[in-house]
Image (cartoon, rainbow, N blue to C red; front, side, top):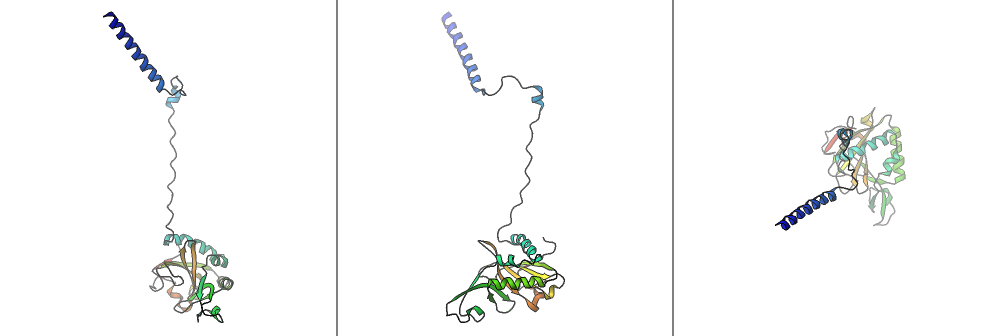
Length: 227
């Protein structure tokens, strides 16, 4: 019986020693054994500063996206920067013969000519070479006493491109919009926004200066107050 008691005591001692060893093993060796000071215990943990909520970017090719791009159009118009419109212009290809494209004159059938689409509202269009386009747009912008972006809009079916939707910017001189209106059509491509048509609206300008022309656009917005 005494032997059993001794064995039992030894087992208990080994068990306690093993438990203590396990406790020591669970202590990270890099932590100090001393208890934290009162100051350390009382110091609150600094809370991270919340990040501001990011504004979601508009869907590429949407009306909201074009509205953001229109700020660049407005800046170029006010600066009379014809180069900006040339840089974003799409180059169209016409297969000859074509009675509306002067560049086809004298060209054999099947020849390709290239240029920028120019349209005449409710009439036929043509193409002009990039250098001529730059000169014509520069002359137009220089002629405006107060060049301004008057309105923007959307049209499901483009006038100067194969696929849509199309978006447009109505440019005027703010002091005389009725006699100075010109419309530039844009489409969204893999390369971003591209101008697909320079539309001359002539005496029918009033159709583009307000929201009453269902043949001109599906959606129309007065630019003032939206930028």
